[in-house]
Length: 124
Ligand SMILES: C[C@H](O)[C@H](O)[C@H]1CNC2=NC(N)=NC(=O)C2=N1
Image 1 (cartoon, helix red, strand yellow):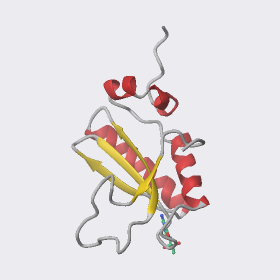
Image 2 (tube, protein in one colour; image 1 turned 60 degrees about the horizontal axis):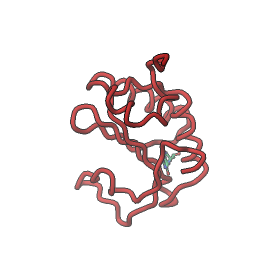
Image 3 (cartoon, helix red, strand yellow; image 1 turned 120 degrees about the horizontal axis):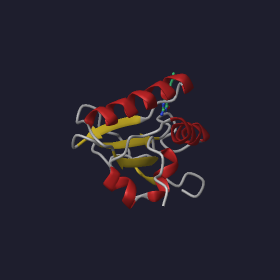
């Protein structure tokens, strides 16, 4: 997305399957952000920060931690089945407030995410 460069528009369930106990009846449009953390504790603490922002805004992202350190954040408005201004506000807050301890290899391959990194960019 142009004003949220780390987020992609897609369909719920395309990035990560939903648990079978709560399959979506339709497939709402959503925005998602995917990244690889340095390790499992880094991914977990990042999700805790995201969770606190969700609670503060009373708007809740789907939080996925897969393959030990891969994080997928999925946001859409359940009541509407699509993306609203509330979703964009949450995504902006996450990008501004959550500093991620990324996998160095992932960050090197995704320099556009540097402004959300907990580790300052090394001088060249
Ligand atoms: C009552 C409460 O405000 C609603 O259930 C909220 C909670 N968090 C929510 N989060 C998201 N992402 N979509 C919603 O429709 C939604 N609804």
